[in-house]
Image 1 (cartoon, helix red, strand yellow):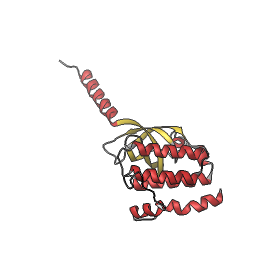
Image 2 (tube, helix red, strand yellow):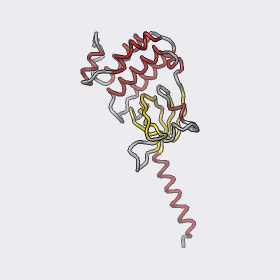
Image 3 (spheres, one colour):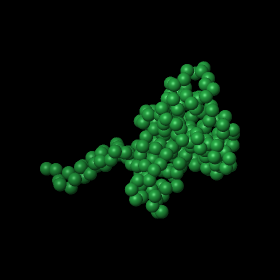
Image 4 (cartoon, helix red, strand yellow):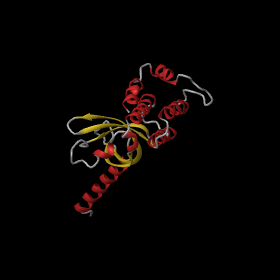
Length: 203
C-alpha cells in the first residue's frame, strides 16, 4: 500500500520536473524595452540560440529589483527564462550582465550608432529563428564601438554583413546606398537613421 505522503512527494517532484523543463538559460543582447503595467518591462532580446525573442521581466522596475541594472538596453546578459503556460511571453526570472558596453553608453555618437544597429535587427530579423552569425555580428559591432573605432565604418560593414547573412544580398555584392535598400525591404523609414545627425552634432 502506497502511503499518502509518498504520493504527494511524487506529485511534487513531478511538478518540479515540469517546471525545470520549461526553464532555460540563454545568452542575449537587449535590443529594445518598454514599460508594462506598474513595475514590469517587455524586453526584445537577440539570443544566441533562439534568435530574436520578446520576454517579460516582471517587477524589474521596482527599486528593490536586482535584475533592473542587468536588463538595460544594449547589455549582453545571461538570461534565465521560464515558459509559463499562462503567459504569452517567456518570463525573465534571472539576468546577469556579461558586458554593459559602458564606453558606448557614455558617448552620444556611439549610442546613436548602437541604436541604429538595434533597430536594423529588430526590423529585419523574424522572431524565434536561430541565427548565431547575426548574434555575433551584433556583439562584435558593439565591442568595436566600445573600443572607440570608427562608428560610421562599423555601421556600414554591419549593414552589409547583416544583409548577406539574412539572404538579402549575395556575398560579393556592394550597394552604395544600403540605407535606401533596407527601407525598401521594410517598406517604412528607419527612425534612428534620421536621428543620427543629432547624435553626431551633440557628441
